[in-house]
Image 1 (cartoon, rainbow, N blue to C red):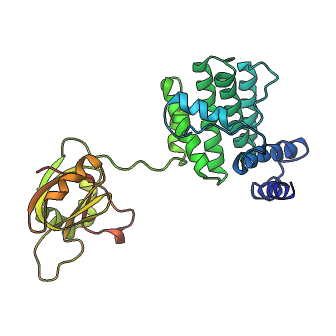
Image 2 (tube, helix red, strand yellow):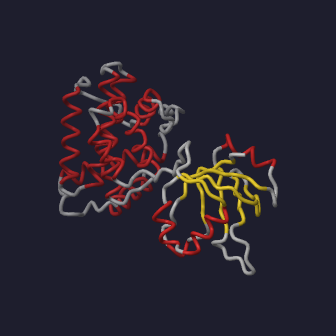
Image 3 (cartoon, rainbow, N blue to C red):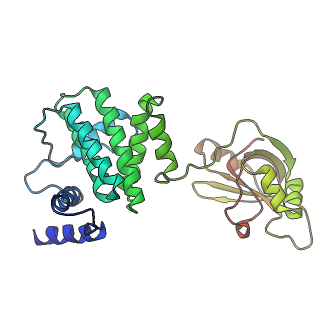
Length: 309
């Protein structure tokens, strides 16, 4: 008990509970919420039931709702699972968030989503579609608030992903919240995706020549475009992903920019790399991504790449 209490106090300090917004009942409410979160991390007390084994990030709405219900600590609702109560609780959480109490408001919204799921999944006292909508709203608001509070934990990211899944059940209705979630920065940036048709076709020598002549102009013209490039293989390396380097412009003292690289990360295309070797001519296709910093430039790098022939 001592260690749990100490941990709660330590977490309270980290979450800034001593701020101007956390006084009196607000402090007790926040400590209660932290206690629930801490108990979830520590695990159930002896004699209590174990939560289900479903992954909360499995994607399907039914699995998400089941995992949320299993995550609830209290699983107690004296309101009879009235949707109006949950909407009031959501507004209360948003009120905290708007006043700057991000940690407490974000935690309240997450707990609200869990209790909604209990009503729908374990009690069958709330229509599933309605519960998914309210839970999705609360998860999104929780993830955005906790991200703004600097609490980017795996659980926060999972909440954001699950919120998108639930909100996309009615994307038109939830367009504004979906947009806010996508632009919040809480979700990891999606990897670049190449289109099926190339915007430009060229040789590796031509690509390298253009890059070395003026990398700024090259990046401006081809950044984010799908390129189809033919050339001679310099090396093939990799583990789960395949990295193919192709020769650019032959010169006495080749530079690191004198190459085209193709990163194959899609398992459907990696096996094709088994049959190529150094010196062979191949054609690859992928999306060209501009380096975040100019000093990171290392040739023409194609992502989401595959061998065309």
